[in-house]
Image 1 (tube, rainbow, N blue to C red):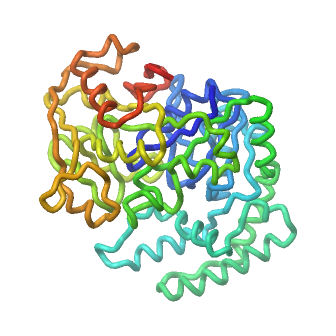
Image 2 (image 1 turned 60 degrees about the horizontal axis):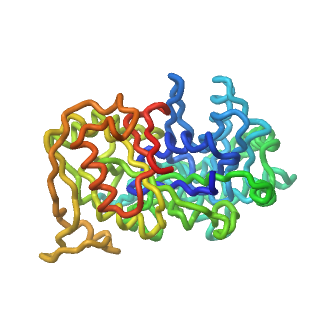
Length: 425
């Protein structure tokens, strides 16, 4: 398999976990390049369901090497819990999972600061953070005060943790939040360091050695294009770059070594948390999509807002990421709808626009311009080839790809690994 970046093309939750799992069969090394444990990848295979927040999904395939890259913010306690969960289900990470010494750590004091800051924001100004400390960890990285995984390997690590806790307590006091126990936290991280030391290495030589030897690399991100800190609906975004450009920054692999970009996109649109969402449906359709699509966050459990497919978002994602192939997921969720709408453009202040506004305030004023297609009212979850699709379902898929640009590579008609149709990839 060519070296591949796999990205989410909407507001996250597109079904990347399953597709990474499918593509991993052809890859040798899987690298997670950004995000943290605020996003989960759900993989259902051979009757087992696993939610992975930090460990790349490739760990479920025997013999695959998995890397947590420098662009990730890693919560050591979450990672230990995940490693132990995998071990209890028969999957051993030791010797196959490697964490970059450059990976920033999300600490308990980051979580406390995240929640206190969000609670202090007035209504209407809340970001919709998951409260898992991701934003403060990335802020610490940029301000050059964060701790990296390599710090776990040095004798000064306990004192570094203590300093950070005491500094955080000053900020928490300003937000009228409870102070943290520095001694308790230091002990927690001493124990965590003991467990994680065997996994922490300089992953840059590891990744480049694999590439030089002709191994196939699969780079996976979390969240989606519209949550990118630069290209998303700022400020209602995450704190990193889930887009394809973030893959090289977050892994250390040269852009010249990337062969293709695969974009994952849902047959409808969802969003979690605050922020503008032009095609959101507040009626029966939104409820149907949520129920049939099981639209609840894999990590947070938060319900997702649901609406019609937005081709403006898809075209934008194609441009920003350079998507070569689309993976279209959850087509089967649409099976019971007699009529299906597609947003092909927006109306902004009385004018038709076909490009994504840079301003979230402008996007909030956008009204979707729809075209309508007939539903197929047949089950598609049992389909195993494109020529088995109902004609109206096939027409819908073809129209989405036409509006989005690029080519169709994979069609998913169910959550399981087996409910996957390869088309051009």
